[in-house]
Image 1 (tube, rainbow, N blue to C red):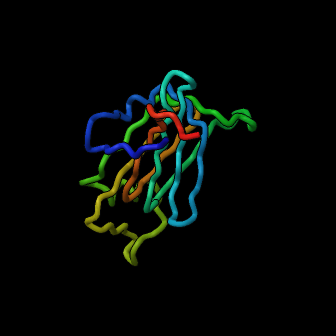
Image 2: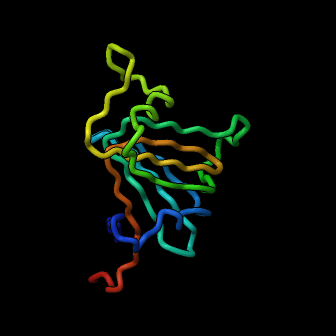
Length: 143
């Protein structure tokens, strides 16, 4: 069973994913979203994060990385809400959508900045996100 984790409550800390393995990166076409899947193996429950209203994303890996590697160790991970300086941050990331004056204009709606560093580096700016944890049901499935 998969449940959405309310990130306003402190039942789940994103820092808990440090040391996990990123095992999946999926682009969801309708609506445009990005999904990251994490695991610790059999030690704990798997976790996924979906990012919606994607404004900017960068996925990088080392030049000499194994081209067949599909599991990436997570060293550092964080999500912060962008309140001040978000136009400047988008400009430093060479965000391509600018007005006639070459400036990035953002609305007053919330924006979030996600960073993952480890065997792979991912940076995302999005309008919203959800964290999901896969948990075992305490009730047996009906036969």
